[in-house]
Image (cartoon, rainbow, N blue to C red; front, side, top):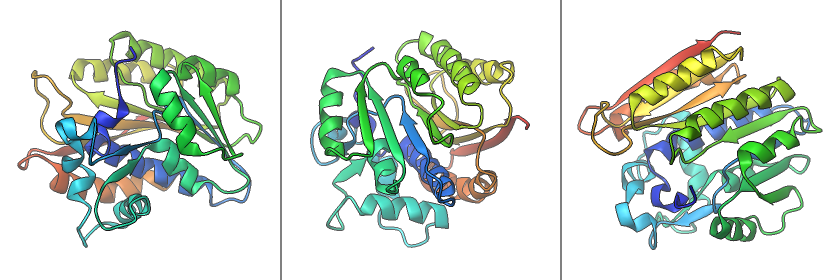
Length: 280
């Protein structure tokens, strides 16, 4: 369970989709002056060095943020994402990639809170160092799927819960859905963003069906694939399932995903999906 390390995959095409949507949702929440709370159930180390260590093993960032770094034709939402990542790189060279906690921290206002859960003993040390004693941020060395439930509803009664498990074991899928159902019962008006990989499509179909059968309302799905589904090992696509999405998100992604498919797809075989899983 704890062999997974975020840095292996930092900045890959899945991170592009996940963090682009994360920025859109946090921007939407920031449109009102009222405070919000951001909860991350699988926060990881905070950021990754792309010029050393785990990130260089498979160089996945080259097929993600690397393909966007020097382009000048970025759609508006992609430009906002790339410019934010550039803010963590003092030179024009891509050497550092912030993960969800530091992206959220960067977008946090003085009145907002950031609650980060991480179970891995090494990752939690790096995460604590990365957030650097910010009084708006609380770090929990805990299993996020269970611990986050006790944090709901937040006192702000506004916010986003990002659920980003590793899906290392098959039971992660059912445990994630069970936790998500419990969370939405405690904080029904919150926004939930569930990331998923596409490794075996039948597991994703079961995941979608479980959400449709759960009683949860107002659910949209956004998926980006580098190549068609295959029986071979490895992630071919990834997606985000959003509960209570901003009303602007679907139109934004309808404009953005076709462009990302062309740029990040593998030899013309990229694809995307935008789907309403459950209506309001």
